[in-house]
Each structure stands twice: as structure tokens, then as C-alpha cells.
Image (cartoon, rainbow, N blue to C red; front, side, top):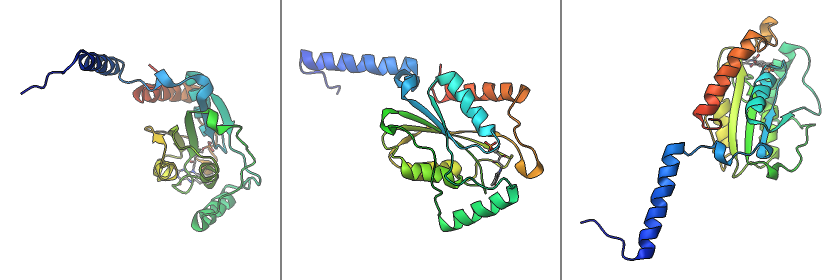
Length: 209
Ligand SMILES: Cc1cc2nc3c(=O)[nH]c(=O)nc-3n(C[C@H](O)[C@H](O)[C@H](O)COP(=O)(O)O)c2cc1C
């Protein structure tokens, strides 16, 4: 048998609840509703500027503060030397110290986190960032560029290192192939195509309408 609300107060509460559920269903419980531009941080690592290009597209569409991760001691210019250094750092769990300092991370509710795939993993400097800054309670939205082999374990590592954050579905796109001398490719026509894909993703995760 259906249980009837016992009092006027219970009836009112039930109606309010129904209105909230209804509003939520019609709006799809948009993440955008609670996202104000000054509470959005877009932090990224980029060596040949493909990930930077995606970070800039995101900023054009959602606003927010853009911050590039820089190291106290930059990686070598040489690609192969960099790969060797990264492999070693991954083996030992070394976290390279960051030159970048982020002012009052507490003021941000949403952190877009961009990085290239390195050694099929999250690059060590991004791990440094996640160890140094506490993103508990924030919404974390990862994005990635790679040479065509995908994000690897990068997005999984975001989940592992941000156990108390709300992680939204990440975005990945093909960038350059530095190994073959192909550096920034997300420019011109490719940048326009990338922007279309980024917008589709942002509306899928309900960050924009
Ligand atoms: C040290 C290093 C390791 C890389 N390892 C991979 C990899 O394992 N898989 C892959 O698809 N691309 C790999 N790449 C290519 C980058 O992910 C790709 O070029 C990316 O678009 C670079 O982004 P950026 O221009 O923002 O630096 C590697 C690049 C570097 C520098």
C-alpha cells in the first residue's frame, strides 16, 4: 500500500523534492551551473605546445586561469635523452621539483589537468603537481595529447592520485610525434578540428551547454 504524507509539512517537503528532481532532469544536472570562470584552473604540461593548444581552446570556451607547469631543472632538448630520463624517473618514482607555484589553490573548484603521454604514462612533473597540491573536494577534468598511442595509464593515475576529487571523463587527441621531428600539429585547420572535438566533449560532460 502507498504511504501518504502524514502532515502538510511532509507534503510540502515532498513537493519541493519533486521540483528539485524535475529541474535536475530537465537541465541534465549541468556541471556548468556551478562553474564560475574565476573558480576554474587550467593547468598543463607541454613541451612542443600541442597540449598547450588544447588548454587554450578549453580556456576560450570556459574561461579560467591558465597555468603552464615548468620545472626547476628543465628536461634536455634532445628527445632520446628526455625519454631515457623519464624512464628512469618512472622506475624510481622521482618527482621533479616544479618552478611553477600556484597561488591559493583553494580558491579553485574545478581543475582541468592537461598533459602529453610520456612512456605511455602520466609525465613525472604532473605527478609532482598532484603530490604538491591538494585537490580534495574539487572537480578534476583531465585532457591529453599523444603521438597516436593513446593516453596509456595517464587518466588512471589521475584517479589514483586524486582519490577525494570528482573526476570527470577525460579528453584525448593525437598531437605531434617528436620522435619523428613532428612538433606542434594542433594549429591551423587541425586546431579548428580540435576545437570542434573539445566543444563536443565539454558539452558531453555538461561543462558547456
Ligand atoms: C619523453 C616523451 C615520451 C613520449 N612517449 C609517448 C608515448 O609513450 N606514447 C605516445 O603516444 N606519445 C608519446 N610521446 C609523444 C607526445 O605524447 C606527443 O608528441 C604530444 O602531443 C606532445 O605534447 P606537447 O606538444 O604538449 O608536448 C612522448 C613524448 C615525449 C617527449
